[in-house]
Amino acid sequence: MLQHFPLIWKNSVRNKRRSLLTIVSIAASLCLLAVLGVLYHVFFLADAAPEQAQRLIVRNKVSLTNPLPLSYREKIKQVPGVAEVMIYQWFGGTYIDPSNFFARAAIEPEKLLNVYSEYKVPDDQWKAFVADRSGCLLGRKTAERYNLKIGDRVPLIGDIFPVNLTFTVRAIYDAYRDNENLLFHFEYLNESMRTSGQIGRSDLVGTYVIRMTGPEHAASISRAIDDMFRNAPLPTKTETERAFEVSFLAFIGNVKLFMMVISAAITFTILLVAANTMAMSVRERLREVGVLKTLGFTQGGVLSILMGEAIVISLLGGGIGLGLAGLLCRGLSGLPSTFVDMTRFTLTPAVAAGCMAVALVIGVVSSFVPAWNASRRNILEALRVTD
Amino acid sequence: MSEPIIQTRGLSKEFARDQFKVVALNGADLTVDKGEFVALMGPSGSGKSTLLHLIAAMDRPTSGDINVLGQNLRGLSESAIAKWRNAHIGFVFQSFNLLPVLTALENVELPLKLTKLSKSQRIEHARRALELVGLADRLDHTPRQLSGGQEQRVAIARAIVTDPDLLLADEPTGNLDAVSAREVLTLLGRLNREFGKTVVMVTHDPHAARAASKIRYLDKGALLPEGQQPEDWEVR
Image 1 (tube, rainbow over the protein chains, first blue to last red):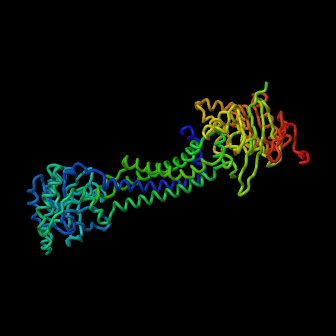
Image 2: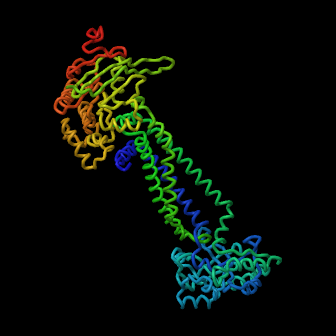
């Protein structure tokens, strides 16, 4: 087969326009397939980061928009295996323009670094943030994106919470992931709600973040917390941080099925395109099949040469598609990691290998029938075909 | 003493065309000795190409025996025939049939890819074959960059590159001008005389047939006895 590669290669690029169009369509499809594969991997298959595996999220069982009472915090703290419990209240709001999107949340500063051990903050900045109730802690990425420095004022117009808050940037944190948040004192939000007459909405919390003594306790802690509040007016749902992230996808439906259907549709469509190209390509060269067989090529030899061309085109398209997907993933990984850790958007070897396998299958399946029929042709019948 | 290289006995070939049965070759008894240059002549539809295709095992006879180079072709499988053809037969087509994507050198190298020769050996053999047909300076030319006569010479180089015992040519000058045709016939004659190749050539051109040492005529599917021509051949 390898010794026929020069012939296979030259035949593959014989009709340059057709080959190019086929390669481009396969590349575009495989690129899309690879990005879907990366998304699927990130959402459903990738392991949690080590620090993330240490954390659980407790929220209202009914919905994320329903709060939990502040009083749950101390009860949760008593559950064996819980090392720390911290309030995490999504604030939302608008920073200057609605398109300026990054996570803004109220937390308990003194507990933050105990729960999010991957956050790195200079000591002096950290102390300044803890000491200033209207101070905020800003992720490095967001600080750079909006050119915010220590001492700058950050006004937020509330939407979920009907209060406008203004913060002073007191600290900037670095983290290998999730470094785009604006975090501020929960007490500041709670007080603002009280003073603005929203007493009914004070002392309520959106979620609690738990740091466990070890990830092996995840199941037992989750069960214990949910059992504790099962008959309470506001029952809880406790899950790993990773599962919590993925649950955001459920808002837009059965993402898993959706991605699988899209992938199947892409593969099927490109299979039809490739099959049509191969059928045309083989039909044009039936006479050459007769010549090859006259020279002593067997049916198997002719079959492998004809199929080899389709495989070369498919793999070329697949390779280019993967390159594009790699670039796309690099671009996506720079997007805000508000709900999903976008830094994980990289083309993994498994996804790349899967896509190349799909390209190979497209090459084999699209060419098999026309190549098989051509290779079985009687020499004289093939030679009689006019160009 | 002459050594028969091709022997056919009662060789027949019938085709089905719609509901009709067409007898293309009817009981041909042909013997070609080693080193002969035989021209098969006859009018269109006389069965000369059919006989040539059966000798090259490009087609199977309906009945009769065919023995080429000591091999009974009727008993061989398709893949065995392919290997046998690669090793023993060189075939020259009327319309050259070079692969347009390959250079002259690559076209000539093609049959050698089915042998156990190394890449460098294959190139060396192909180069020598092209030198033999006078195209040493056209190695990297594609068929489109060659004249008809040159294309046919490349095709002859491809046919002889495996050093076959038998060279079969189907109207090799049919698509050529007079000068190129003469060159090709001279070449075939040289391969026969200097290199001892047995040549069987189908032609309906009396000038081309003169290059052969023996002419056999076919008419309406029948191979006529040696020395006999179709009745109105000269008129035609």
